[in-house]
Length: 194
Image (cartoon, rainbow, N blue to C red; front, side):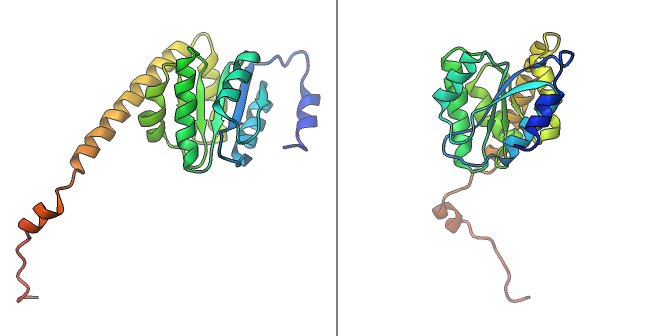
């Protein structure tokens, strides 16, 4: 990434105006940044200005920098499981502060269903799970384009609502009975014929 950056900067000309500012950070408690760096390069190559806060970034710093730089998108990255809870915390804090900036979620432990069930309900703005770097460019474009951003957010909210309902329905099916109930109703097995 460090090797490519001077070439990327040199390639920017007057005709390559910025498509928007994207703040990226690996959340507090996580030091993994390879995926975040790849996404940053891909977005940078597509004329987005990237503000990379690095790793182990607390929620408050992410939000302060997002407001200070007037970013169009916040991208959160994390590789380890505790990062998932920190992403929920960032989304909750964004809602508490009344922000409307689209929030992109990415990293190896993240998933669409986790984003739908745990992160999306915490934030009224657009929350998008990005499964890999190649998908970040069209998602960023739809998230901030004046022509698509509202319909994109509404469609995402509906998709995530449906995913939550399906997830909850599966959870009710998995409810187990107590050990005592199971012991009182053993399966009748004829062991003689085996």
